[in-house]
Length: 321
Image (cartoon, rainbow, N blue to C red):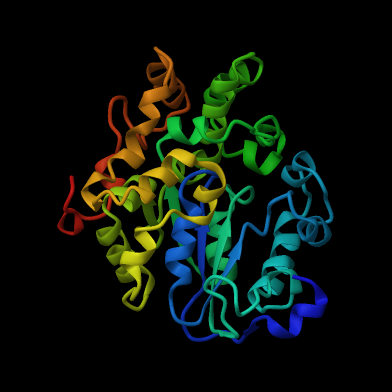
């Protein structure tokens, strides 16, 4: 937001409830999840503060490209100073005008949607900022098919702190794929490299794991689960939120927008998680899970749309599956 409009933006004074950090990868439904949380009273949403697509990120981090962002030295010091300023409302670029979607003049709690950074620093984020962690996952195939550019994939294993988290066998496996010409395989590996630190080194009980699939098909139950886990108020306009495509969907997915406009009932929402099968090349699904197996990840399994049971919302909150 321009400095001229800053007086019409947001005033933030932290309340008693901890902030929420959504940790995910692109094209996983993170915008929809942020919109759900943004509907909470006095909630402020901070959208992708680590994206290299924005000038304010360059200014705050001191780098202007993806490789340098991954290789950034003193990450914790720089991230700590940056996120402190974000959470205190001291960066004018994130002072959303009150007339914007979910814009509020006065807020007391933040939701940060963190993509493109800190995949190996989730425990540090939680401790440093005393925040609640939401780890959002999505099946690797639709994630890769809908996000064809992977500007950081070649850099992860050159980052010393990140590389130290991987086993030698997984590093060798990953380096063989990085040396290949298959952009699809590299995309699946990118998915693996981003989720590997959290899922290989253990999901903490305090973290909330939720999937795009449950948010899509079990939207009401998924939001109730979030309300229980994150100390949220009942979401008053939930039916409206789940009945509209998210901002990111409007920008990039005409088929999904058409689905929402068709007015199909909520039980038809399986379409949202299985439409990728219509454009999948033969052998791709099997190859995807060869890569996941090679990287030691069992979040999803061959032939299944949903993640493993341990990563789903509780059964008592489900209605459609």
